[in-house]
Image 1: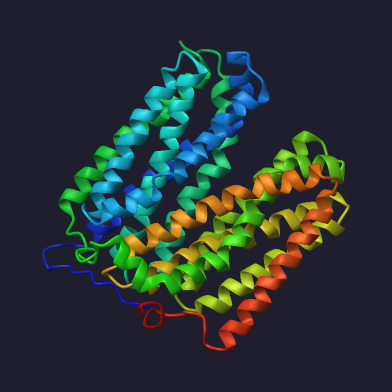
Image 2: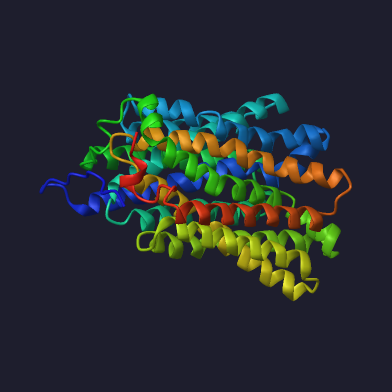
Length: 414
């Protein structure tokens, strides 16, 4: 694991970085909530604007497109500005886009709000993850894991948050507008707090030499390609599964809509401890074997899902799958961030992130298209399991031959 340069003069107390990290956890919760809030709002907004499923569904799509678009440009900005400055911009974008969404008088205006809320999340993740790794260079995995818990908590509570706000009839304006105003107000407050804490803290200078996006790619292409190959396909599979999970449970397992949505929430909830546990393990165990073990466990749970028929079995598999797949994210981020040198961390991570997002976005379309061609969900999932197994076998062979970058000394060869 590469040691991150992180100067901490005697006058700066470690608690200043801990407080700054706390503000980052608040911001990551908000930007992820902004990216996810549209899914549970689709049906209410469909009634508000009197449009069809495709028109309102574009809101959720735009939020994810927005999260993808700025990742590489943000990498370039990180070569010009400090990490904390870009994080601050993401908070400003989230505040402004939430206000745009709340003030929308047409679906088109809401489209703009959704896209910009997605942009805020993309800018945030690319700039904040390297900052977290540099704030705590001796425990990168653990802190990335805690940071991930805050983001995952947004996924768990988003449906309940929407349901509670919409159930209250005493608001002076429409409930959906209250939701966006609340996100905007808390984002504004959190951004101000982050600004104040960043001014008071002595921030790491590890990214001072990170000034060339092209140089970062040339110096770290083996690591980037390896990381994308390791987690790109499994991420594609996971996105395809969870986006259509409720539909799958209703069509293939005969469950009700309510039970199916509850099990989807269970999947996200069991991901919370995964970030903490696996983030800590990522600081102690070899990256490649750990990532391959996670991939194997996910393949096993996905195959088991196609076999079990009882409700108890589906609940158990859903819970285990949620834990397993969310273990992937802190480990893969730690693998990339801890393996990169100070001179390339922000830029190379941005390239990795920008490459990953489009691959993941293909998942729901790919699974849906295969089902529309006449395959059953179970047949599609078993085919994806075969692909995961082939990925594992391929990497075991490459790893045994020493062809896979597994630490900083290997990954930073040009």
